[in-house]
Image (cartoon, rainbow, N blue to C red; front, side, top):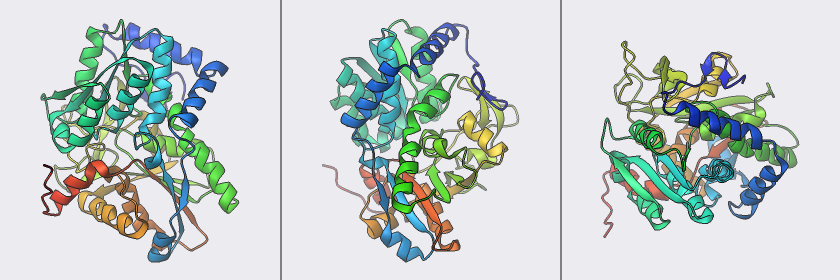
Length: 395
């Protein structure tokens, strides 16, 4: 990255009303990201509040059943709040405190980022408001209640397609109206500089830990690292410390929805094109006139029509590859990992698990795959049951 650019991607594409505030965020990030006192507080909270390091677990049953490579699971689902999102939120909220902000706002899809933001706002005694597409509030009611329980106000966004991209739009509009006391905590590796860089840095703890852990247990680096991605925070955190190790193949699993040959998909890397949206130049699902397309995935956390700019640069340079996983494949993987390993993983994570199911049998037993589990799947049980034709009584 050079001044917020990843090859030709990234940058700052902002309305005049937001540009000065985003620059203040960039200046604060530059000031504190290498500050020993800031880093000490960040890592102390990761350890003592979030519960890091997360486990690197050898999936013995999956390894034996699939009959190929050794499979290790990086257990971000075991973090406080149940996902990787807490890592980045702690970092951004600490910057917000140092900037004198008293209010945090966030967008959320599956709700995990919203829960993490509400959690840290409660811890730091800050006001919190979360913007969530109406469709996502309906399918993630448990996380909506969790956010409210933590003291956050949740706005159900009814504009557009009523999903994650619309939540981002609403959060940006609110930020433009009230930036004096507010910090916008972006949850994915998207948006104007410095957000993709901040998310990379704060989520890189995932790969820093897994690299050390796998060398302790296996004596070497993995051959593959696999992670799901919508905007890309989980995947960039999983990849970050391996990018300079060319022997490690990096694979991102995105949401194909009903299939890449249908209109009901969120496969940005497979089907998207270069454009400008949400303050960045990146890759988006859009029509020939540059209008952002509606997207679909069973996963509320992956149905975003774009991707973080660093991921596009990694794909264009050949450093990482990206595969599209359908709803059916992800749901099969959700049930598979539950039955094989006793882990109910987030449906987002199960896009990566589905890719591991395909990849592992093609490899020899001396190969090693690390698959990151994005978060817990409690939030998804009702929707998966419904997908299978089972209605759960929630009364």
